Image 1 (spheres, rainbow, N blue to C red):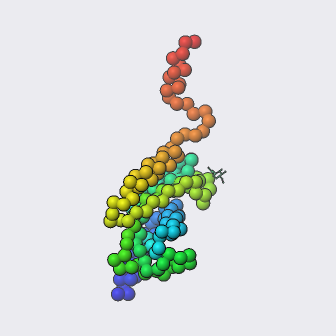
Image 2 (image 1 turned 180 degrees about the vertical axis):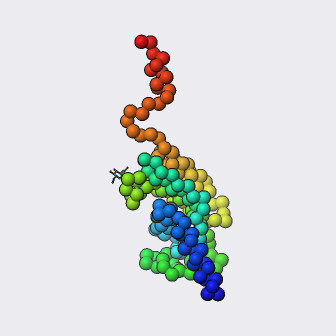
Length: 164
Ligand SMILES: *[C@@H]1O[C@H](CO)[C@@H](O)[C@H](O)[C@H]1NC(C)=O
């Protein structure tokens, strides 16, 4: 039993260690956001992080991921989020998370979307699609060159084609 626990803790440490600091920060921000909602009556614990996308652009560092949460036995009250045992047959939530950090001062969050819905139901899927679209916009915004003096190929061709 003790060996199994050590093994589990080992896996947990490995999972957390293989995560970039910004991925980890995105997970923390999502947990804070989720628990700050008044309709969330129980503390939930992170179960898995999947579908991770990370991109860095001069306009910001973008992280997108899916976070699975499991219900614990602790009521959702400030200061009661430690040492909470997972509730057997408790509820599960699936959260779509995307965060954009300032590239030059990464502690600063420029934009953030967190949307959680019950894992085994269709409820909230329509909202999730909208959040997905907002995440894509957030991701694309960082890719546009935003420095002055950038020449678009089309503009150059056009000015060349002008009569002298
Ligand atoms: C990002 O951080 C830099 C350095 O602290 C700051 O000058 C800049 O205004 C920030 N960018 C945004 C979009 O807030």
